[in-house]
Length: 148
Image (cartoon, rainbow, N blue to C red; front, side, top):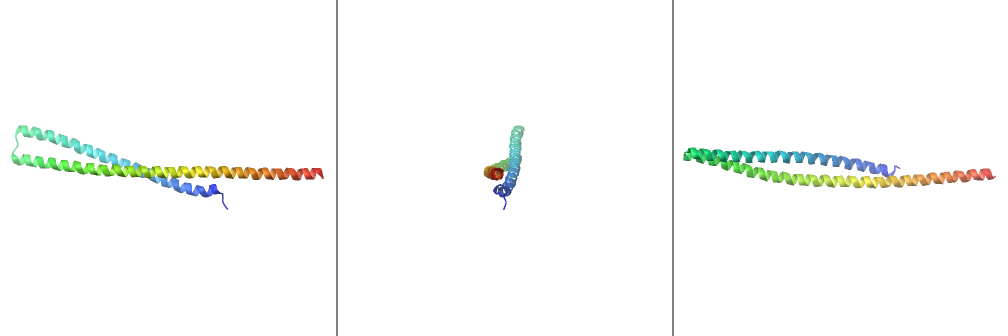
């Protein structure tokens, strides 16, 4: 029968792989969030530029039709920004869940490694006791042989 620490190693390996996978997923989720933040910033910047351009065109004089078209485009930008903000909030929640999942996985792996270290220490202690008993027995046998 194998030692307890050896059996625990199989579990630790499994937990380590799960932790690694969770960390990779966390990284990908963070990257997606960063991309979405950048996209939101670009939309907001474009919207500001659009407003500035609209103000200049209004000062230069626009027809009602041109104004309505520009206003409709600005409304579409506002909707796109609102949609991007919602998407960003969803990615932030995903990131929070991914971070929590990784933390739980990390703690589980650490706990199992501590248990394994304790098992190894107990096994070493037991092995040392067995060796000491064997040495004592040999010494006793040697003393008996020498005494006879």
